[in-house]
Image (tube, rainbow, N blue to C red; front, top):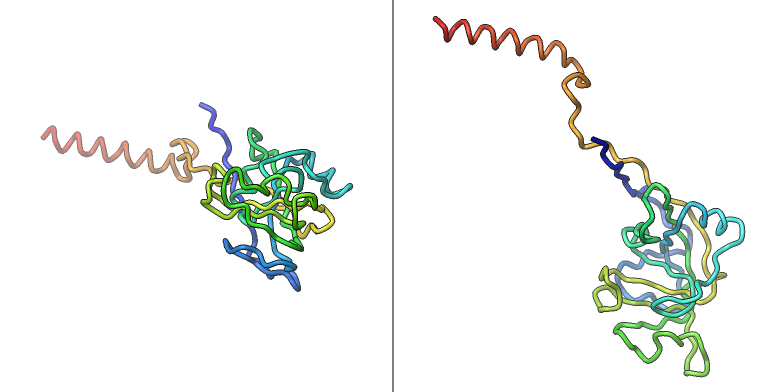
Length: 193
């Protein structure tokens, strides 16, 4: 029976790059630079490395580059892609002017970057558990890809198998099996007396 390989997504404990902050789940402060993550396929990752990030054509918050401050969220993208084909970029993002989009049908949900609708924002932020994402995890959308600088690429590593080895594969299994047979024989002799 074939078992599907599982993968581990771990990030080294790292020193934050100079001038960069880790924000947690709080609203990002305007003008600051934060660590965020962007999940993609290996193929698209190569294009991003050679050509830079590009705005998606559309999405929950309209066009932009979608990121999260949560590695666990980013590692789930793109949907319906095996972990072995995914990578996550750890990036530094100067968020610029930030707006919180904290409920469905927010009046600025798709036009936060358009001056025809009022103040212009560089980043739209969906707080965790606000009803905007199915996962309940926070999400950010950055209008200008030039605000994003790649810091590191994180690839999944195969997780150690949790499947128990067969008797023949286990270290010292033949000796253990032999001792087991001898014990069974001795027990049978003892019981038969």
